[in-house]
Length: 139
Image (cartoon, rainbow, N blue to C red; front, side, top):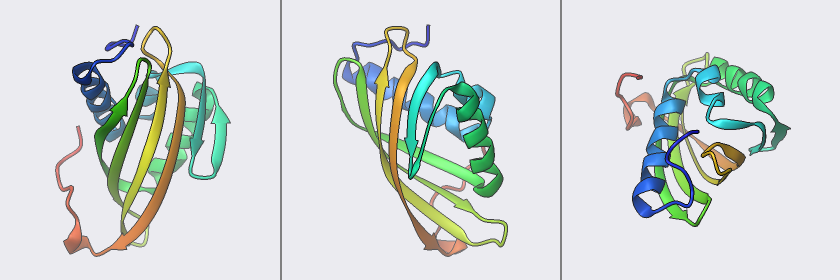
């Protein structure tokens, strides 16, 4: 079980979004993958894959490239077992160029509260280091 469980209320949907934000800000692929079903289906930008091993591999590659990653998620809408979020995150590449990435995610959960589908659309904007908004230390 991965509470809060569907069907979602406004309060439980916000709690689910906060838990996802906290997990992703850990930058720990194995920890993050535990929030998804064994056969979770993903679309992230132009990548399509399925299952926890693929999630761990994807997140490992992501955080090797997106350095000092810091994320903020916001509840956009919810229904019984689905949540939509908007998000933005900041990171820099190995050359020191900073980016702010913006996007939307559509989530679908099973009865145990594990995410069985995640579809993300993301756009990147080059920013100056001085334009960063997210400067907290990681959890």
